[in-house]
Image (cartoon, rainbow, N blue to C red):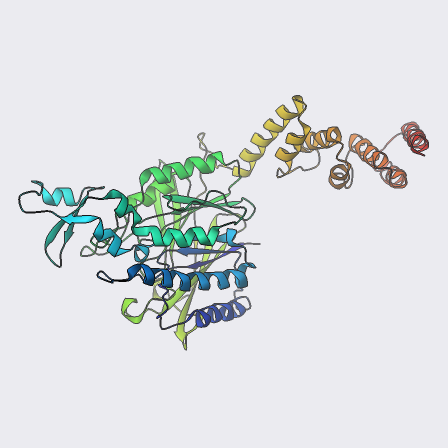
Length: 490
């Protein structure tokens, strides 16, 4: 079966939003009842990804901006709480949230700046303004030059978001690496088959600068941390907020080169928002062979009419990831009638309501297709073998718990040996069902006899001896041993 993700973006929640939380949740739940029965059928979501702009934000000069921000996040949290309960049974470990530019408090950002007086500006003002990491800001409305003078205050422009974020994930188990104020957070989905890197693309973004930016070291570090996690991720997903293309008279998008860096580090599905309309495109690099990422944008879930592109409704996506982790089907849902969502033909998709994108799996240093599950299994098997040699059977069992232990495999042999050394008779009985070799039958008989269940031990001997071609004299020896052990326990 595929894995399904509810991809929503640009929530713009506030107590004064023209569509209430109840209306919105009702519309999403009602639409789920429709699309799981449509043709083609769409799988009900297994996870939720929210790609930024959680709230509407407040304008500059708002006197009680902290109070208004708190109220907006309370509205957003109530919405996400009920949606998580209804879609995922309340499991917040399967909800991925990132900030967007609307989550930045402009008032806090401006308070960290001061006007640059005439004569104090650098010689190359234009060059300094466009330098990555510059502390200078130009106010086009008032034609004034500002400089960031308080880095701590400037960093606090996302504090309201991070307070909400920390509250949402407080006490949640099964999170990979989720910390407020981080440049990226890591999530694990589908039993560690899918890894998600959730990036903050608002580096340097404030009331006077609209572009998107992700720290390059954050992308590199996320790649290394996923590699070191020990989990067999078969698909790596990157999530950010800002769009990756735009017209020359706009600056509120992100450098496509940042996405290329993700592709080269094994990310094969990229999810974002910001542009308020759905889009699904392939991004490629050549190193030297072609490597591809499916880049998918969700339209705005709650933007007002003035914020939506002409001819575009409120939208969200349902993403179905194929069971071979090499493609995604993107279903776009639009709110076109009476605040209700449904499928809508889209010009960008040739009139279809969904699009399918494929990607190339990452390759190993030798040029072959990487198989993360096999790499993970080999590493765990080697460590389990070393643990057994060190008489640490418990560690060996833990290492082999998630490894595929097919009959006849070395992993299965090690697992049975470790369980026997541990005296974990239940694990042995569960694993050997049925026994595939005479050695496994011996393990099974020993597990039953050590548990005092001699009846099942004799039944197993009778049931499996013929199929395993166990000689009659050996069967007789086993029966005598079982008789002797039962008498000793009597």
